[in-house]
Length: 270
Ligand SMILES: Nc1ncnc2c1ncn2[C@@H]1O[C@H](COP(=O)(O)OP(=O)(O)O)[C@@H](O)[C@H]1O
Ligand SMILES: [Mg+2]
Image (cartoon, rainbow, N blue to C red):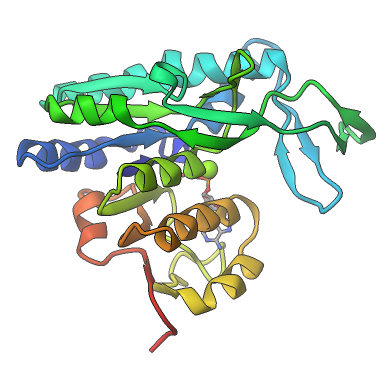
């Protein structure tokens, strides 16, 4: 399972080449992508800039009202996915683009209304279309993998009550890797891995032992926190090899498999 961050933008050539190599050797590869940054760009182009809501605990999240969900789906399914599928096809991969709604692959439960701050005003938001992943039924992916295809999957997820829900792409990748009993979950982003100091790219944390997870979760801020949580969830639920690595290099997937980036390990640090 390889998750490519939306933060990578056009810097995905190295990852595509590695995916082609692994798939060419008969490896079963699933690609997950996000798209928050592209959704923000598209929303701005459409003249309805993305908005953020801030919860009482200070946590920021995307305010996914109906127009924002529309922009998100357009960005992920209309721009990023075809770009990734064509790049993979060019590298010789039989890539198939899907989202959580296809084949009821990923269902989510809608986040209940919450009192948050939007645009500086405190109010109860009832029109947010985001949720938490409820269930992953990976049959469709198993079928495609069996046929030699490389599924390229992303949010949104399916709301059993009807419609789509935005869910976090790192959590999406983590839950899929667990459901598929993947050997590897490699999360590629635009940083070398988990950094002790986000401003210092040389401050890489090379290993996160389970016992030190809560400390790292406390220290990690912003968008690294959910990435770390997702990776840890996959590792603790049985994915044996979980890595956060830099997607911008030449051979990022092979490098991650060889020990680059931040690796999750059992026990305490040595
Ligand atoms: N401790 C940290 N280590 C690494 N990155 C961090 C850390 N804290 C915050 N970040 C930020 O998290 C970003 C990666 O998350 P995100 O932008 O969501 O990427 P992606 O699109 O790959 O999910 C980095 O570019 C960095 O700015
Ligand atoms: Mg992210």
